[in-house]
Picture (cartoon, rainbow, N blue to C red):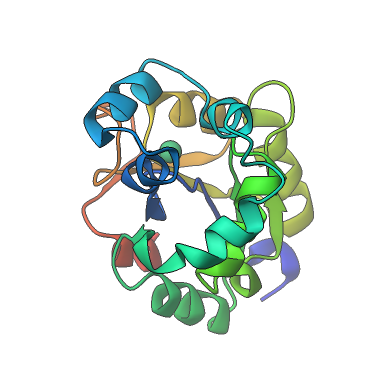
Length: 186
Ligand SMILES: [Mg+2]
């Protein structure tokens, strides 16, 4: 199988890999429900954490509270299995690098992604496209929000909707996943 034939699966993080919203609420010392509605309305978690002075100590926070950041099932085992069978994987997230990298490290997931493309101004679409250029064509993007589907389709990627996340049911998804371990069937 040539390089361009490899299966490529690109992941969103919040609401796709981990249930981070309750964890952020804990770090900020606020009610999870209130924070969830702010985040659903588009408020930026990175700015909220930065405003509370948590940018500089975020790595320490992520390590200290790693246990409380819940993954959606056996994520590490699934990623291990995928990468062992030659699937090429990446992360495209709207979290900035100062959050995404320590969180991935705290959950021992960094080594399973060939590429981590954190927030940069603008849409996820150019970063999904860039991942595909590096890893192989016709990627899947796994995400939980309709905005993820827009970005995936703009980048000519197929979109798999993580139904366990924070988004509304998406009738335009190319695939609906009911559990994290279904990503191996993409
Ligand atoms: Mg998400």
